[in-house]
Length: 336
Image (cartoon, rainbow, N blue to C red; front, side):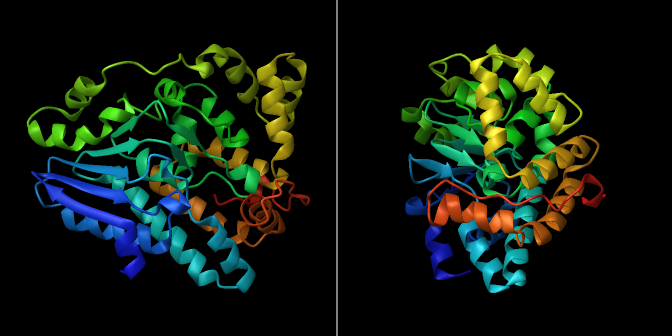
């Protein structure tokens, strides 16, 4: 473990509840190789420690986790350091699988931004708590990448065609939408969030679900916006091809359709193609199969011009004007 990882991941055990706190606030807890390796090490150590629960949280109210440190991955690609990139993704996906299979209930407290790798930390656990400040998204198609961290497993398993919609467009959703889709399991007000770990410790014999429901207090401030457009989401994003999705969006004369179409037109064509194929196949794969397919895809995708350009435009120069190239992928070239 590096000294920086030791500072960026804070851990302790109190009264039978393990706590892992992400502590890289200036970077919105963007995950480095050292951070994910340290979380994985701690969870492996705790697995047989007779804990009643493990809580994953952040020291910052701005973000639970804004994703992986994809800017550094771009630097590795430009330097030709494929080993460093491979190590990051392999370590991250191993942690995703561990969380999914963990023998102790994992409770993630999502306050603020939770994107990309942040969903990888949270969604695979049994309990995902959101506050009124939560914002969730898989924005990878906008930076020339694709939804990874097991997204090809969990997005196709969301209701209807919501997963395809979120994966292709990168649409941000709030607490109400997260609860509606199942990406979140419970709501707890932000000013009550710090009491979750103590409440779990106070009632080790009670089901985690019961403890969290006691803390809910009030409901999210708004009803789900996704629920209001669910019929259109399913009709459009349930189409068999990207071309048909765009055709159906153009046919609808609604603000939602215009926004979704604009998101697709702004995204990397290569990323859209990869994402559509991955999600279409993901429904029939196990999580570990999805993670293996995603890992294989990272090896080629992070070296493509669209990835280098997308990260440049979003995170390096921040001009938000990527110039995409034509896609070099076809569905048949994706990992089987």
